Length: 150
Image (tube, rainbow, N blue to C red):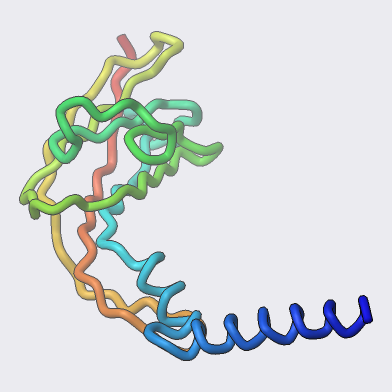
């Protein structure tokens, strides 16, 4: 008797799950629509005046942030890697800005801070996932820094 009740409950749950999955979005469509939002990607390299890549330099992005937006690593700022590269990936926002300001700061105090304002370019990208795809116009900022010793 107990076994029959458990089988009935399990069967009902399976029917409910199958019915709800067959209505509306398929799993793969939902996944890609949730993951797909316009991105702003800022990237470049930080070097010294002798073209030597600099590690552990903080690069922040401004001009695209909300007024009260808190700092978030990899979203608003990053540290350069061992060969001076950096990449910030964030949500592009509702507005489509034409320019962003990037700031490179050396926390060790060896190099002077540098501020660069660069244009934002927009490019149509296709994101693939689970057999479907979405076309998005992502924003790109490319800025290389050459820092001078203080």
